[in-house]
Amino acid sequence: MKTRRRARRATLEALYEFDITEHPPGEVLQRRISENPMEQAGVAFASRLMQGVVAHQDGMDRLIERYAPEWPLDQMAVIDRNILRMAIYEFIISDETPVKVAINEAVELAKTYGSDSAPRFINGVLGTLAERIPSLREELMLVPAAEPFPE
Image 1 (cartoon, rainbow, N blue to C red):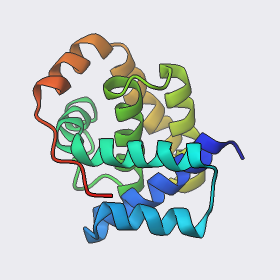
Image 2: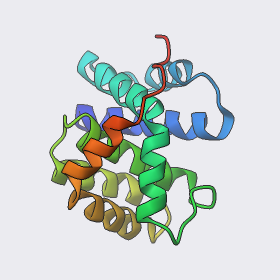
Image 3: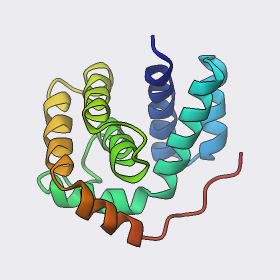
């Protein structure tokens, strides 16, 4: 499996645990990485992704609520909302991953971890967001990010 795909899986698992338990995000990610060792590039990517999602969660959640109004955030599957957060961080905030790649990776995660309808839902929400990247990027950059967690 490719390094970044493995890093995304570890990050999603860590975000899931963090979302439902509020265990320290840095510790949760380190435990996932130790259970599934990967190249240093993958560890670095997973760490950036985890820190970015945690730091920008509030702003990203507002976007999810706006562009998926039929699914209130607290009623959305934990996996789905974290897949959306990861992809939004990747292609809107960090701009490190091409939009099509981020959406494809999110859909693949939804196929593996989500319900039968999750891939279509994830693809629809992210596709709508992808059409508005410049304005959404500006909006999210105006929202102060939380402090990153200690390593």
